[in-house]
Image 1 (tube, helix red, strand yellow):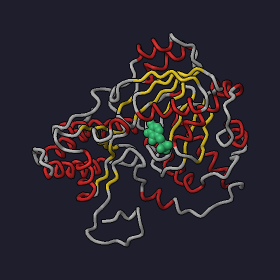
Image 2: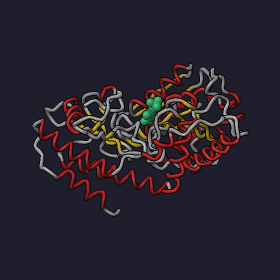
Image 3: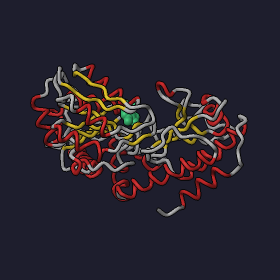
Length: 393
Ligand SMILES: *Cc1c(COP(=O)(O)O)cnc(C)c1O
């Protein structure tokens, strides 16, 4: 059956309900979808100023910072580019700490703009080891260090509390890609002393793709004054000057910001600590349920609260699992990226993905694996999942 989001086909049998289980874009709550059809307002008028003022203040809470927050209409990668070009100059030495595809991308952006990038890479599926990072730092000096909070391609969460102190001792700026990590995992930006944090709308923020968010501290703003990389659209000086009047230098993505207003309120009403716990609980239940199906996880520790990477059972192709899940049961899981293509599939459990979605996913996965010849104990994965979701800490 054609997915109703990919064409205009009217509702038709067999009435399959799509269950989107990828680590972004995530599902959007129905009430927020309705908000997305709010009529336009004058983006230079008082209504927008009220909207902008609320969004920037709430973003500060979500980023756990008293620094500046900014919103750019762009994919998350635009936010990473904005971080790089606003604090660095061509020829600056940068240490990239990469544990997967998105860490590599951050480094590639810095290199594309003329930074001299030293790559500290770890095996995909592992977290960055602080001692190895320290060793690389001693070969500095580096102007900045690039780190991913949650590596979406591998389902691994870096330990920023352990990685930040050596970077600060070194005197380098710390730029963090928290696009899939923010709201799912704790990143106390000011407390740790992280200088720039980047996030994106289609991950735990529960709105569609199209906005990227940055939070920057005083040290980043100081570096910005001397930074010489070319930039125009993503320039912080222009954005911050407009923001003083709760305005934007270019037309804001009003529709997405209407949605963001709703989800930020909801996220803060739940409270960040509760959000972290909720994501952690779903992640743990996902791992246990996968293991109940005798599936191996890619990671062995530092598990992501936002996405779980699962290896294929011996003799069964990832492609077969994913297409059967989708075609028969409407469940969409992500494949592997780069060198993990065909080796893993990834189950998202961030944002508006809820425990019942996981139950549907594992019910479908059990059937799918059985259909493909993997021995399955019917009901065991779903029972394990439910048990773990119900378990108190
Ligand atoms: C999704 C994601 C990105 C890329 O975001 P786009 O919106 O596709 O540009 C970058 N880094 C991480 C960690 C992500 O999860």
